[in-house]
Length: 192
Image (cartoon, rainbow, N blue to C red):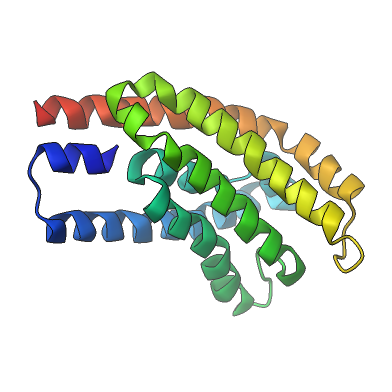
């Protein structure tokens, strides 16, 4: 969406790169901070239920497009792990890290593939987010099934966590598209 807006404004390549980079870093920072806030307020069950790291990644996909969002999706759990490891309480835990990187990469890729459609009509944000959620969770579960002999968790355990996170997915399936639609309305209005 943002690419289309900047192209229509005849923005320079430097301006496009700068804005994409700043937004990507901001979304990664949000993906690190939000889980910390949720865990402080609601404990670990709150994180499993609300899935706060997914929110900035989905926003990034819809707003930035798949290339930049893919970086946000893959780097968010890595940066979170690196920073929280310093406190002795790594989030996500090391065994979960590669699975979350893959899952969030899929979230970013799928939602990002809709970015141009979202620019044309903000309602496309709804299928973008829902399909990203379904694909991302399926990839996580599939990878666990494939690597269960070396992973410290089973498909059954992950399925239980997927079920526990339905509320977070539902909130995000509504909140992210509404936020994107509102941002689109402001940005496209200013673009005309």
